[in-house]
Image (cartoon, rainbow over all chains, first blue to last red; front, side):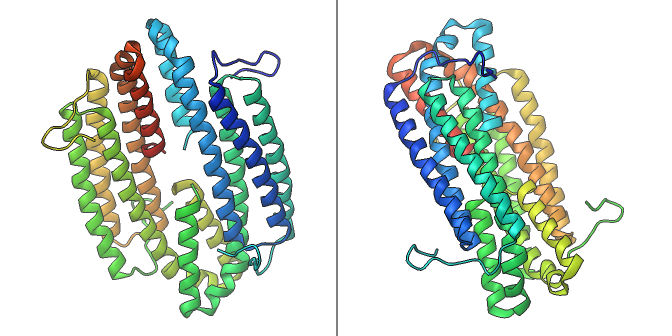
Length: 102
Length: 102
Length: 102
Length: 102
């Protein structure tokens, strides 16, 4: 994990994917404020839970886009170099998939 | 699903659970802004994905709290009344579990 | 968790739900044998993974049916009795949902 | 998806990963028979659900191993060839991740 003082950066980022994710995250921020309002107004719990699920689905879209960028722009060069570096990259990809994506 | 003009409300809400969820949602809003910044700065994709996963985990906590409130404050009275109303409540609970919670 | 020497039993079981689950489990056993054969024959990994996902979906159906039985036949009486027993039952239901169902 | 008359095969399979998966699948078959017995004996629903979850976890291990084999033995050559073939492979990997793995 990169830390705040020395954060790691992507080898390359597709401008389209980046723009799509920034837009999505602005919308998600609005959805979270909407959730706050629903809780404040004592809305029916299953209705709020359905909205939480829709925010989670939107976040899943963000992850998927990041994963696509990672595979096409970062993983490729490591895999092409082969050997230990490719091995390490595969391990990291499997880790991301099984720890963080559901 | 309730609609915006006639939203449905909870039969009762525990003030503790409500306060906990409002606090959590403020934090989640901040986390989403943090994600926006990470994407803007082209941070390493697996690091952003890990942060997305942590927001999803926090949202899971919100759902769980809502589910607890729903069971203890709303479902109980319907279940105690029994018959069709209890049946409908069980169907709704199963629906919420299998459609919206992961 | 009940142990093998003193296993816990359901307060009541709907004969329909039980029959449906026994049938499902026989099919799932066959599907698992099919997976064994696919692995033995070196079938294309994404095709096997898709089959694994279909077994997991079938298991989800088993859990859902068990949950329905649990809510309608076991939880109801505990909830109707109220007080500590109802509290304990809600805690257990939330535990099952958040630990074991995805 | 390959069909039964012309099933697709893996480009290459690691003998270790294959042996590990065959062993796992035999155990899973036994676990499913154990679930059948638990349902037959009207065991306590949350106890059966916990066992279903443990079978699902074991199947997750099978998928993970298949994914590792796919990345290291099949995806690599496609990715190394680059161009459209690499694009198609990335699309397939993302599909597998987001449709079949949870």
